[in-house]
Image: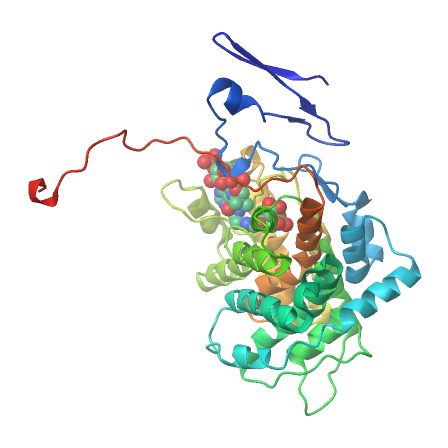
Amino acid sequence: MSNATFSHDEVRLELPLAEATQGNNGYDITRLLATTGDTTLDVGFANTASCRSAITFIDGDAGILRYRGYPIEQLAETSTFLEVSYLVLNGELPTPAQLDEFSKGIAKYHLIDERMREMFRSMPRKSHPMPVLSAGLNALSTFAESKYGAGAYDPDRATHLLLGAMPTLAAYGYKNSVGQPFLYADESLSYIENFLRMSFGLPTGPYPFDDAFTRALDVLLILHADHEQNCSTSTVRMVGSSGANIYVSVAAGVNALSGPLHGGANQAVLEMLKGIREEGGDVTSYVNKVKDKKDTTKLMGFGHRIYKNYDPRAAIIKKHADEILRNLNGNDELLDLAVQLEDAALSDPYFQERKLYPNVDFYTGLIYQAMGFPQNMFTVLFALGRLPGWLAHWREQANDPATKIGRPRQVYVGEVERDYVPIQQRG
Ligand code: SDX
């Protein structure tokens, strides 16, 4: 591959090649505006790389996803969420001693300032837990600073503190919504076990752990750990590029993730399946509705900006869904409906022509529901999984000497200059 050349009228500009180790290369247009007086236009940044990154590789045509070079299929089958978090953050799989130190360094931060309980208790019972989680993360930055001063922003401490506090914040948001007491973490339990017990446990007795349940959640969090420059990760990077601290940058990522086109899709899929069931379970008429251009209905959990093939995460989740739902006495009826919907879509030219396949959100909600989480908690679980990716990208950006504050340009299509008209002369 070589540099590209941009030419327009008598202007010629060489665009240096930004070479990838794998996948798409980039053409560096840093000099374009200064040389031509014009910018590029790429709504949604579908053709634009915002940075160089070494964390995650996706080949959307081949349906490949790797964290630091390791295939997602191997990590999902053999690793744990904390080990994958270490990998995503540090670039290498940990030794036993490194993993032990990492886990202990996180566990001590499961305990958050006692006064944060009042904040959660002050939230309306019916709050959606995503803005509550975002509020908790913003508040966490103030409690961390009040306790550790500037040390709160040491990247390693902040990373461990956020990974430790996130399960607690997520669980407390849920506990407040169901009016149950908050539980403290138990240092004899694993990361996932602590989250499950703080979410579903009661102070009146032991929590009945189910190993299949715990492992299923571990795998789901692995599958969500990172996904390169997706909307919420790009938001974390954008906010961090202004010098904003890592806590509020992650809170911004939570807000971006809450949208139904992004992480909120896992909740929207369940709502869609239940709606189809209430209408009599006719997937064909739903698919026809989706195809009707006059109708804005989308097939939630389908389609992806990068995957033009089956999302490898969806394939893993679907494989697990059968066994997990059977173990958890989950709702097979909705799973059957989802499989029928997938089959109908994948055999329909509308979806084939647009290369629309199930994405990570299509089957996850069925499993989360079977685990006992309410629909509005599904995206909180996505955030719990995505946290290591957000942290890794924030740190990669902070350590990159090439980083500049994010400030895109625009193509102005408004009014040209005109003079002010006094109100007496208007109307
Ligand atoms: C996630 O980026 C990431 O990596 C995200 C994520 C991660 O891990 O961080 O993978 C997680 O967000 C997964 C996506 C979850 N969202 C949904 O499931 C919502 C439904 N999907 C769509 O809204 C859509 O597919 C997007 C938002 C995911 C992608 O949108 P794009 O890339 O902007 O594609 P597009 O809207 O330009 O669609 C191209 C065509 C259009 O038709 P035409 O105008 O060409 O006729 O495909 C159609 C769209 O109408 N289309 C769909 C569709 N998705 C795209 N039609 C019906 N149902 C859909 N789901």
